[in-house]
Amino acid sequence: AAGHKTLVPQVIEELKNIGREDIMVIVGGVIPQQDYDFLFNAGAVGIFGPGTKISKAAQAILEVMIESVKAP
Image 1: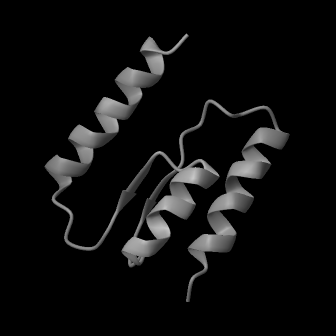
Image 2: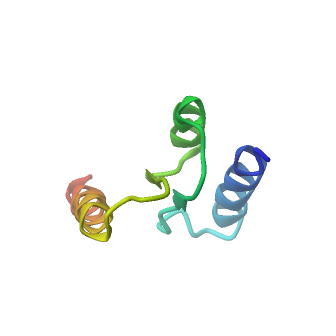
Image 3: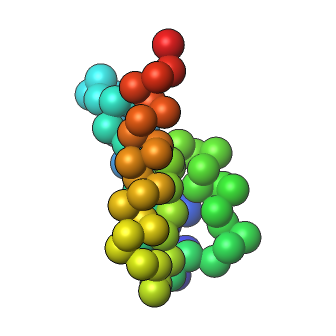
């Protein structure tokens, strides 16, 4: 329970440690809505709960990827 609040920041920190900040972290599963801001602030770029339609998730991920290419 609430492992996402520990594991997501750890994964993001380890990616930074090995120079792979270019890897986007997307989270899925049973995550309480009140934890979303915490995860976004930790560096997650997407969160998808149970029942998310694949087409919706794919569109959101593509939008994040396109925005990352546009960023300076």
